[in-house]
Image 1 (cartoon, rainbow, N blue to C red):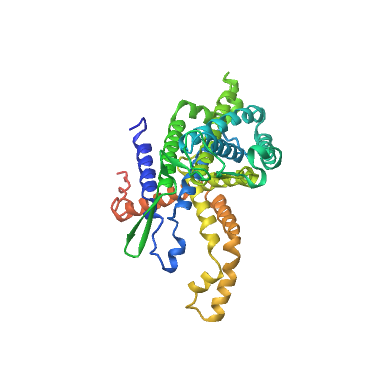
Image 2: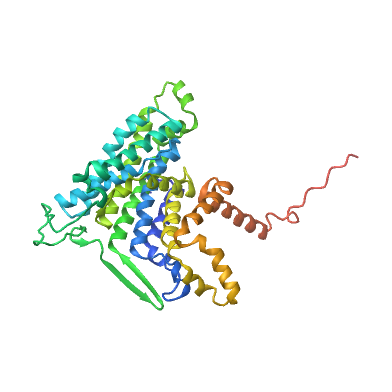
Length: 405
């Protein structure tokens, strides 16, 4: 199906089903309950799940396949965002041209950065990409203020008058898809549950599925095998007479275009761009996403992006008042002590929780969350075999040893 083998087709269908049913899956607890704090099925967070999933998928094509670790990938996210916002300010409010422009701008910038950075490998490559990202941030923050808006960034204003949109005087334009407002939402009440279906989320989800499909094709292609050879032993590859540079540059540019796509979608969801998207912490975040989910795997980066964005938006909202509500059944002294112990790991301290989770994954699950899922799957299969008698030695007695007469 679609040029994929049965295993990859099944994976793509599972990801598609989870993505389309996300409003139900991410809202497991009824509204008004104490556990509703952990629901993540609201438009803004769901959009971030899929958009940063795209960002991590693209980064994984570079890092997971070639082993080249970029510390400056947020530069392409920012360049794509600026390209998209200028397309919307000058030409049209339709998000498709804006997203296309974001991908083109990010790809062209990736060609320049990759051509220079890939002259080195290892830590030197990483430092070069970090330097490019920080220079891009500095340019966007102060030097190129007329283009980037400086510290305050860019957003759609009442003075903007795109060529292909007839806005009334003083009207602020909105991102749309052929007239359909990206912020439009539909709500479904089912008993105590409330499910929200957002137009912008589903548009971003379609792009994520397309990006995921393309990553599968890249992983399974001869091009992907060549990138794995680069990661395995680039020196040995060069001894065979093959030049790895065109392949690594192509991977770098493709990865940058994925980041540009994510940047364009961020503008489509929220028409505001600032230089902070290019800061080094944003580059470090996508590295964490990929490693946490499982570098070199297909679904891992998406899982890692989802986990980090969930913690950033859910764990960070938990405060002492919510904790006191949860532990109100405890004696007063024990309740206060429990809240005191948990307090450093919630709210503004959610980074501490993320750091602990990351350490545990790196130490015990070097393959990321994907490896954890594989281990659980093997355990369940082992239990099924044992319960079915296949693993019971009584069902398969050893033959008696042959005794010579």
